[in-house]
Length: 51
Image 1 (cartoon, one colour):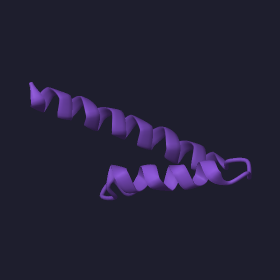
Image 2 (cartoon, one colour; image 1 turned 90 degrees about the vertical axis):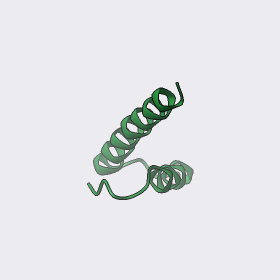
Image 3 (cartoon, rainbow, N blue to C red; image 1 turned 180 degrees about the vertical axis):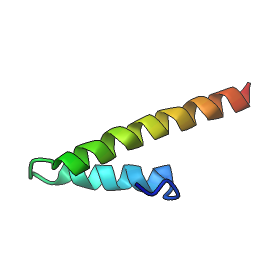
Image 4 (spheres, one colour; image 1 turned 45 degrees about the vertical axis):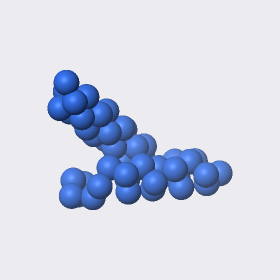
């Protein structure tokens, strides 16, 4: 998985995946879970930086 892709871009891809009516592949499920964890980590970092 390429960690250089911006979280925002990954979340946009997830949004498109959610719009498809096809069942998600295991790779898609893993991509979603990894991206959600990264997004939550980034939010925590931003919150700590704001304090």
